[in-house]
Amino acid sequence: MNDFSSEERAAPFTLEYRVFLKNEKGQYISPFHDVPIYADKDVFHMVVEVPRWSNAKMEIATKDPLNPIKQDVKKGKLRYVANLFPYKGYIWNYGAIPQTWEDPGHNDKHTGCCGDNDPIDVCEIGSKVCARGEIIRVKVLGVLAMIDEGETDWKVIAINVDDPDAANYNGKPHLSDFAIDIIKSTHDHWRALVTKKTDGKGISCMNTTVSESPFKCDPDAAKAIVDALPPPCESACTVPTDVDKWFHHQKN
Image (cartoon, rainbow, N blue to C red; front, side, top):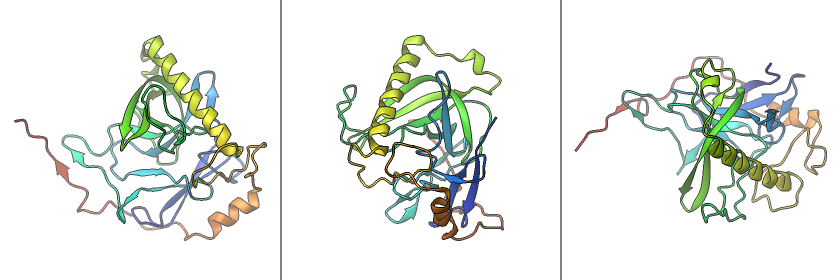
């Protein structure tokens, strides 16, 4: 089913690390702009940024050409989430729905805050541990509105349609319909972004498939972006020990 593959550049858990996406022809594409939002009617594609049970905070690099996945950085340091016993890292597969954008110039009527300038986030609750850069098909169950430093940050709750329990999880119709409406609105904002009808706020809209986009490039230009980066790391790489430790919650 999956027509996409991924390619790593440089070593994981370093500032230079990147994960690029490729199509069925082996050509480099943007996970932000070139992966279709829909896999089927009301079934969405999801780009997995952080596999379940891992704690390195990875994200689509919205300002980099071709928008590879890279590790988030704060105050010059690579970011990790805490391992809260008995769990390790993220308790779900975490990622984003492609071809969506939470517009920082749009005031959300539900939250009263503008968007966070990123694709809409997804928490996928299925049993499979996905791979970083994997593209999966998800069914939407609901959505949670979060306010992060004054910005709207929607979190879509979904399940992989290929999960053995997917048929048992449907969500309440009014909640899943509301969530789908939120996703559709962020898709409209993305469409305005990639066709240069709104200010991109520094986002790279380089893509290889959006015909009406002035940022569309040919496969050779995309390949040149990747070829200029360090090759993949051939040795095993592990999370640094100082961030790979357990934390415990103590009751008062």
